[in-house]
Length: 256
Ligand code: 0L1
Ligand code: MG
Image (cartoon, rainbow, N blue to C red; front, side, top):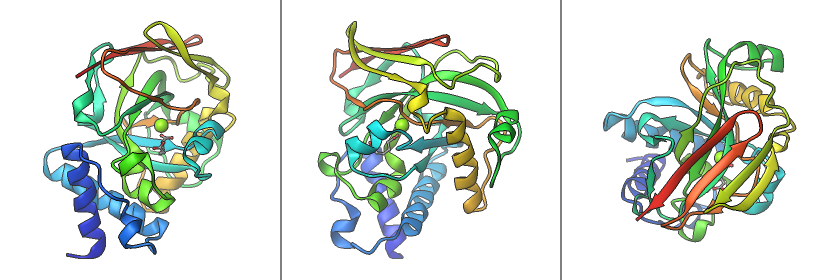
């Protein structure tokens, strides 16, 4: 087995069993960003062998708050599968994760293929609808600590996500107030403008990222544009609700 394939198996197993593992760069410090995306892709293949289907892409580290929280200053991306999508309003089972955190996001659903270098107008023309969303990130590395190649190999920490009601694609999501509440108390406040200045830029970046490796954002794909605030660590018993100006809210409860 090649080293990258071995790392993909380790990451896949860590995610599947919710078990923290040491950073891959502890034993192999020279892993490149391109190696890391290859590990991510090989790890997705293990999920696909178990019947999972890719249904989208997540963009990560798209806001300054997120970059500061993890000490990495580059936009990254990962893959979303059908089993990662949880039903809005339902429970999240804490024991299925290593150390989950939640962050508010804007979601796009794609209506026609999008790939490579595109303008914001071209990206918007490929959008079927927009929605409020929350991503559950869960680093598979001990203590939520990683280097840039480590986190990319680990599907950019993506773990699960919730999507709220879909709205027309022309809905202006460039600067919407966002309030994340935990048991009714404000925990994070932000604006969608924190996502690269305008979430549509994240879709432009997603098209370019997948295009770089010969892939495309396909019709029906969901694209999570990235967090607008720092992420909140989840504890059983918490009721999480994020309200988005003009878009409505998304909620779930953290169960054991
Ligand atoms: O979705 C994100 O912005 C997270 C990317 C990975 C960094 C982290 O785990 O916080
Ligand atoms: Mg995110």
